[in-house]
Amino acid sequence: MFKVAIPNKGSLSEGAVEILSDAGYRCKRHSRELVVRDAEHDVEFIFLRPRDIAVYVGSGLVNAGITGRDLAQDSEAAVEECLSLNLGRSRFCYAVPKGSGITPDTLGGKRIATSYASIVRQDLKKRGIEAQVVRLDGAVEISIKLGVADVIADVVESGRTLVEAGLEITGDPIMKSEAVVIHRKGNSPDEALNLLLKRLEGILVAREYVLLEYVVPRNSIDAACAITPGVKSPTVSPVNEAGWVAVAAMVKAAGLNRIIDQLGELQAKGIIAQEIKTCRL
Ligand SMILES: Nc1ncnc2c1ncn2[C@@H]1O[C@H](COP(=O)(O)OP(=O)(O)OP(=O)(O)O)[C@@H](O)[C@H]1O
Ligand SMILES: O=P(O)(O)OC[C@H]1O[C@H](OP(=O)(O)OP(=O)(O)O)[C@H](O)[C@@H]1O
Ligand SMILES: [Mg+2]
Image (cartoon, rainbow, N blue to C red; front, top):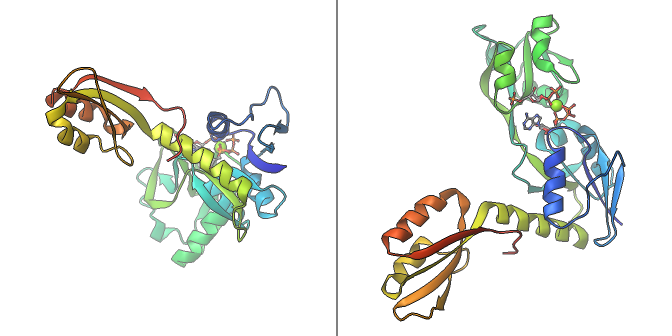
């Protein structure tokens, strides 16, 4: 049975279960099960700590996993990414007490608290800086106030936790992260993994696009198709009224209102947008 590790807690846990469920897999836990079997798809979902997922995948004990890019890198496990899931986006940054003036170039000799010791050591090495890395499990932002560190390196999303702790980001992000599907480095994806990836890709596209349908005067069809070119090409069909045609096309949800306005200027009528449940391009 194909084994997929997913986070049992933390920021990525809900999103991972949701995208897999949208892709048609049965992976919801009813209580605290560690394993959920989807017999129909011949897949076993194993609930692990997000930090441990890359270790299991890298050792070949599970076939694939969903975890954060930062966690995968920090683990130093032999894994590679096969798909980004567009969820759990964050930046991994150095932060210092507001107004302290400490920058990434002046980290030499400082104590840097982090839950991602390996990423920080790699970054310091790249910069040629010697500093002390203090490995903490979480709530890293409080460590400076409590006196164990001068600087932190941590995950930043909205930045609210930093502000509340009186800290500010210094320098560019050390890395940008999001939830990714990983598999063992060097293994070429087998049929079961490719199927999982295709289904997840279908959900990513479905989340990004809507299906737009409208009718438009026949003499405006070229202009309308230029506004809604679809992914491959729009579907144009006859309607029961002379001089009009119906159009259906996938459009990016992000620019939807502007597209509707432009179609309105072409006298398009009956414009409707529908969510897409899944999609295979
Ligand atoms: N506030 C956030 N917004 C988006 N992604 C985040 C956030 N905090 C953490 N992450 C990402 O989630 C992943 C796992 O971190 P998370 O903090 O959820 O796990 P954890 O620390 O093991 O769990 P917990 O915080 O519940 O103990 C990492 O890839 C991280 O970048
Ligand atoms: O920029 P923000 O939106 O404020 O989010 C960032 C915070 O979220 C995470 O903390 P989490 O709740 O996972 O606690 P932890 O640090 O104990 O893991 C992360 O470690 C930061 O502290
Ligand atoms: Mg956390």
